[in-house]
Structures are given as C-alpha cells and as structure tokens.
Image (cartoon, rainbow, N blue to C red; front, side, top):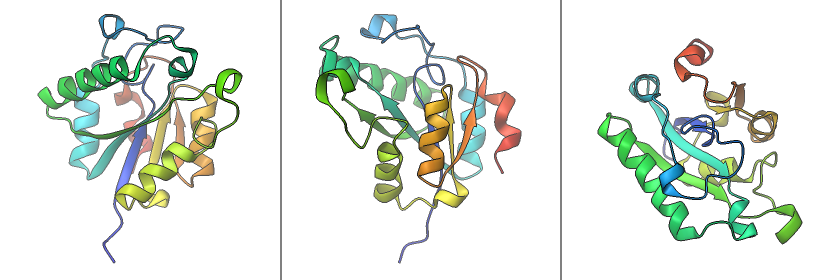
Length: 163
C-alpha cells in the first residue's frame, strides 16, 4: 500500500483569484492573487496542492466547460511560472436550482473525497483553505481541517495554522 500524502485543498474564488462577488464567467475577468510564495512554502513542506470549487455558473449556462478549462489553465500556468504546482482541479458543475441535489457541491464533501481517493491523501494531515463557511463544513465532513479566511486575504497570514 502506497504511503498516504498530505494535501492542502484550496477554494478558487477569493483564495487563488480575486473574488468578484458573482461568478467569474470569462478568462478576461480572472484576476489571480499573489499567493505564490505562501503556496510555494506549503509545497516545499510536502503538501500536494488541490483546488476544490463550486462552479454553479456551468449549470446556469453563464459560461462553458471550455471557458472554465481556460481559466484553470491560466491559473495553473501562472502559479507554475512562480514555482507552484497546482496538481489538480475538482469542481462541481451543478446548481441546486437547475440540476437538483448532488454530492459534490460544497458544503458537501464530494470534491474533497474525490481528491482524497485519487491522490491517496491522509485527511488527518490535510487542510482546506476557503473564504466561505461552506468550505470549512466540506473540509470537516471529509475529515480535513478547514481554515476560514476573508476573501482575497493573503495566504501567508494563515501559514502558521498549517503544521
């Protein structure tokens, strides 16, 4: 059995890119936050970096999977250019008003459970940083320690909460 890894799950909007108050629907409106050094430090400490994000705008038809892929490619490349590897993106394409209930929309833990299973993550040694209470609830439900930040808060301010 392979050894379990530790991970930091990251919400997207308000954590990795600027919170716009509504869905970010176009790559042109996607403003990446400078959390490069903080995430590099976590990576150097041995954490896998995984993104877990609700993307209900897909169900609403406000943007396409293709546009979302462009946003995630830009995010991944920009962080990579700063020495940070975002290993994977897990997203919920559903919205309760349009697609009914699902297991992946935060505050449910489905996105984190996908990452935990795919990468053999040890939840007890892992964290979820998010700017909404639903992120902390999802983390707790998946056995991961949730860290609540304010939208667009520098991640360097919470590094001391991560062992």
